[in-house]
Picture 1 (cartoon, chains in turn orange, purple):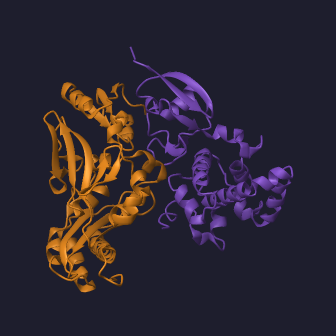
Picture 2 (tube, chains in turn yellow, purple; picture 1 turned 60 degrees about the vertical axis):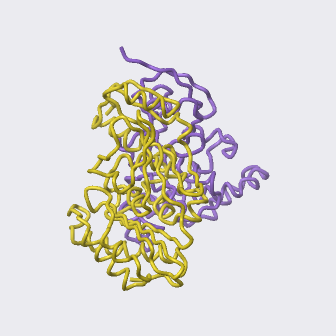
Picture 3 (cartoon, helix red, strand yellow; picture 1 turned 180 degrees about the vertical axis):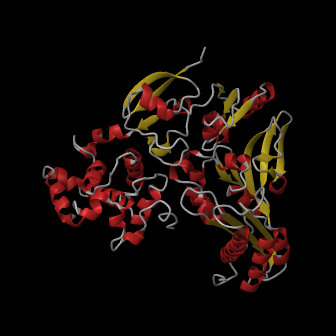
Amino acid sequence: MKAAQFEQHEPETVEEAVSLLESLDDRAILAGGQSMVPMLRFRLAVPETVIDINQIDALDYLEEDNDWLRIGALARHADVEHADVIQEKYGSFADAAPLVADPQIRNRGTVAGAVAQADPKGDWGSVLLAHEGEVVAHGPDGERTIPADEFFLLPYDTTLDENELLTELRVPTPAAHEGSAYHKLKRKVGDYAMAGSAARLVLDDDGRIERAGIGLTAVDITNVRATDAEDHLEGERPGSDLFKRAGELAAEQSNPESDEHGDAGYKERMVNVLTQRALGDAAERAGLVKRRVTQ
Amino acid sequence: MTDTREITLTVNGTEHTIEVEPRQLLVHAIREELDLTGTHIGCDTGNCGACTVLRDGEPIKSCLMFATQADGSDLMTVEGMEDLPEAGGELHPLQEGFREEHGLQCGYCTPGMIMAGKALLDENPNPSEADIREAISGNLCRCTGYQNIVRSIEYAAEELEHGEIAAADGGVAIDADANADGEFDCGVENCCGGPAAEGDGDGDRGSDPASRGERR
């Protein structure tokens, strides 16, 4: 099916995009388009106007400064997949990127667009939550930042205001002893997750867990943090018994629905296993832990 | 009534200026405006990869992009393969590979598979089987002929590696290679790739989309 007719705008600056958002009523933002184009052509979205932000060159970046890893709104999944800084320092991002969709889609789809889409089965929301990241948005009143755990509201719904454009995702640069990982279960390449778990561990000099972050995919109405498991981990030394209990707590806090891929009980067990694996990899990458933790 | 826009696409080295509606997909522009129907539309959802083309050297699904978004791009479609220097005026080694190794059955997915294979070999001239399967993971073959598609791309990789030698002695190397790979010739199993083929010794390597999934 063809998309319905729409008027097209291609702003070249963030300010131009925001003023278009302000002045136009019925509009959709088009970034990578790997979800939006099918939505338009199946007429699930029938906007009068499409604001294509791909010409805003200032949003095409992936960079690290002293405080943050910053992912601009036009950075593609493939940019994250192939960036040296990601491979070296951001395990969860390096794990998640090649698991998103397929190579062609990763060449076009954007990480920020996937987060803005807020599909509870999306991978990046969990990674962002585990890292206690932030979403940067530009609106008529300028820039604001939204903590990741205040961003997701409902499936496909976020706390972005109507006239705001998501311009950047950012996560804190790693501490001295920090590691992260992402594990995902899916039937085949290209599928969304049946379940997924992102974990980030920050250890103190003594080897105890100072901060723990766990984000879960596809097991609730949004990507969610497993706060009970996080609380259980903090202040403790990494170990398989500890991670086992954290996996159980994450599973208990998740709310998966039964579907053709498996019943809710199965998915809860998968949350448990995937969380343990992600924690094991995160601990190993954080250093101070010699052997991979097995379940 | 309908607003159209003028865009310029360089396709297989030839520049085209066409008028498109903002809602027109790139794949429709390629097929309907430029009459290059080698690029196929398989699924309407972005799953199948039959519409894969190279945009500025990168494989993309041309059904997931509006034509206006490709304005100014350099595109390559399957029709451009035989014009590449490696083709030597005939079939490109990838096309040759699909013929030699029976990489096509109904042929519908073939243009997308060839473009995905081309993108892979441009980046990685010596891919492992796992690399090849990853590179074509965004492409579905409903005949489930994945085994032979992988072999076809392996054939092309070898052929391209020996390309200089082949050129030096006037292309004889192509025949020699075909003979060397005699185990993959038109045997019953490989020829039709149907259930009988899957039931044989290496059928468990997974030739259907469901089981070819995670290989990392």
